[in-house]
Amino acid sequence: MTLNKLLVPALVLLLSACSTFKPSRYSIDQDHGPIAEVDLSHVADAIPTDEAKSWVGNRSPYTVWGKEYSVLDSSDGYLQRGTASWYGKKFHGHQTANGEVYDMYAMSAAHKSLPLPSFVRVTNLDNGKQVVVRVNDRGPFHGARLIDLSYAAAYRLDMLKQGTARVELEALSGGAQGPATGLLVSASAVRKAVISKPARFIQLGAFSSISAAQSVKTRVALRLREQRIDISKSSTVPVLYRVRIGPLDDSQTFLNGLLAQLATEGFVDALVLDLP
Image 1 (spheres, rainbow, N blue to C red):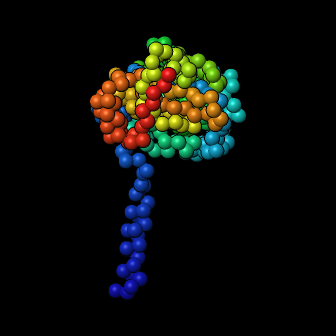
Image 2 (cartoon, helix red, strand yellow; image 1 turned 90 degrees about the horizontal axis):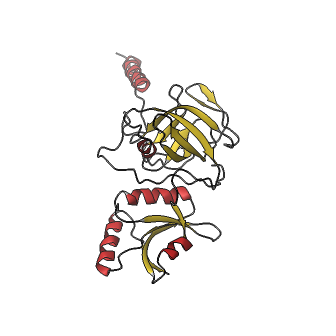
C-alpha cells in the first residue's frame, strides 16, 4: 500500500470530524436560571443617564443568521409593544455586544435595534409590573421577540415561569424616573440622614460607570440583605458613583466581622468612612 493510499482515508476522517464539531464559547447548552432559588425583589432598577454610544455594538446594518438588522440613530420617542423573553446562566459572565460583561442579576436587556446603551421602561401587560433596564446587548434573534431581559428583570416582572410575556417598551432619557425612586441618593442626602453625630459607612468602591456601580450593589445585596446599600453620585469631574454600605453599627467587633465577610467576596480594599 502506498503512502497516498494511507493518507487519503485519514484525511477524509479529519475533514468529517471538523465538519461536525462546532465548539461553543458557552459552557452549557440549555439556558436556565440559578440552581439555588434567590430573592431578587430588592434589585434596583437601572437609572437612566446620558451615556455616549458604545464603541462597539452599534454597527449598522449588521447581519445575524443571514438576516440584516439596522440600529436606530437614537432611542428618543421609542415606544413599542411585543414579546419579551429572558436569558440567564448560559450567558452569565460572557461579553455583551457592547463589550461589557453580562450579569444576570443586574437590570439589563438585549435589543436588536436600540442604540447601545439605552434605557427602557418595560411594562408587563399581563400583570402591570414595571422595571427599568439598561440595554447593552443584541438580540433576541428567535422568532418575532422584541426584547431579551436579564434574569433579574424577568424575576421582577414575574415572567420567569412563563418564559415570555407581552410587554410595552418605552425609551427613557437621562434623568427620567422609573417606577422605583430613591435608589440613587446624593452624598448630601446621606449626610442629612444622621445629623447628630458622624455615621459610619463602608465604601466598596468608586466607579466611573453607573452600570458598574449597580452591578456591585446587586452582588453585595444578595449577601448582605439586612444592610442598606446606596449609590452616591459625586459632584466632581469626572463623575464617580460610590457604592456604600451604611449607616452601620459602629462597634469594632461588628465592623471587623463585616469587613472579613466582604473580603471573602473580593472587596479587600473596602474603606471604613465616618461621614458627618
